[in-house]
Structures are given as C-alpha cells and as structure tokens.
Image (cartoon, rainbow, N blue to C red; front, side, top):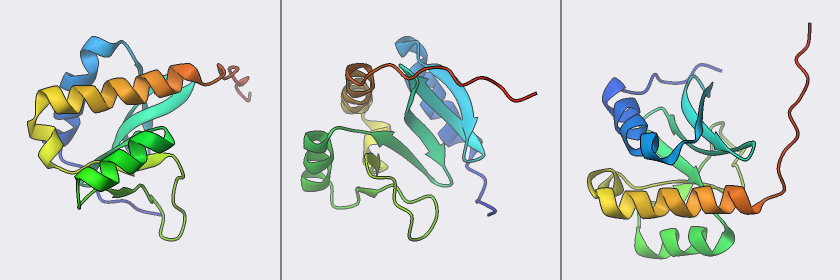
Length: 120
C-alpha cells in the first residue's frame, strides 16, 4: 500500500519535540516513529502525528478535541491504542509535551518487549 509522503516540516516538528525524551527513533509506515520500552509510542503518518495512549488518555483526547481520531493507517484496520492528535497541539509545545509524556509513561508501564532476532 502506498502512503502519502509526510511533509519534512511535520517530521522536523516531531523530531524537535522528541529529542529531549531519549526515545528510540525508527522508520515505520514510511516515516519517522519513536519507541520506548520496545513499544511504538509516537510517529508521523501522511499528514498527521499519532501517539499511543492508555484508555483514559484516549477518552480525554476525544472529549477535548473534536478532530482527534483513532489511528487507522489502513482503511478498516484501526490500531486500538493509537490516536491521531489534532494539529492544534503541534503549535502548543507545553500541551504537546504533556501528551508525549503520557504516551512514554504508558509505554514504560507495559512489560518490556524482548528483542526479536534478526533473520539472516
């Protein structure tokens, strides 16, 4: 499946916000994503930024922002714990950082994922 390439501006914005957090940067969905404790926690997909949140965080995001939605990289295949955050948060550094921290805290609360052996 071919995805729309995200803007370099959006990728740079995420990188700038994630630098202080020390998460592991990888490429997924054809763009930049970050992992903590072995779990994907935030990334850029097409024209938006998505992040992983606990149930309470997902409900709060949905109740506070009408344009927050569940992350669905492929039509009909939503990712259960991931939400697309509204663009208004990209501009509010303090609020954006609070959502990032909530995502990292959630990933760190999960049992550590074991590293998979690479195929030869």
